[in-house]
Image (cartoon, rainbow, N blue to C red; front, side, top):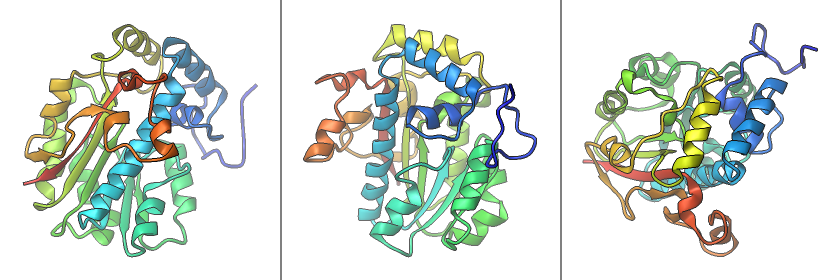
Length: 275
């Protein structure tokens, strides 16, 4: 039976699962459909740490935003932002500084619809429905131009999204276009799946994701590091998510994956500052 709900945008294809709705499911969200959940369960079978990996990637995003806030960044462009869930960028940034501004970007219909509803009463945050692989569409969008000052430092957020960008679209060129649009002092936070840490599991995940609208392209440490061209990579470098500025206290325990082995994170993460 076709799944329907009042929150489902008109015209959405319920039959073809998407990465945004799969991620929502892994994080414990409710904005996903039967086909998304079926794919997610196959994803979990291929990568048993999938839920933990999703949580750790979300935690990296939070820490990266706060890191940038501490360094004076007050505006953010969150590319491939996904479906709103606990700990959204505007919530993190505006809790630290109520004047912080955020532009979210996602092409997925449910992500756009829910972000629009959530941000309706927030004049300092908005969303652009666009494909992040077309940077000029986003940088020139009225929403972006109206909210962000591209002559002042910007936090470019690309957390858990570039593994969906195929090599044919030239990921390095895409990142460089965003980099060149923002001034020195801007920062880039990027995380993505790699085959380096868990090759067998990653191979299975790639196979599973071929049946979705968002096939996956893991990259090596060297390939991910190369995406930071033009940025000075902050310490500790490009590392598994759990090792990037882990919090103290209970959060530090949260950032451990599979007991005491952070290499089981499956994702490399890093932050760079534009020269």
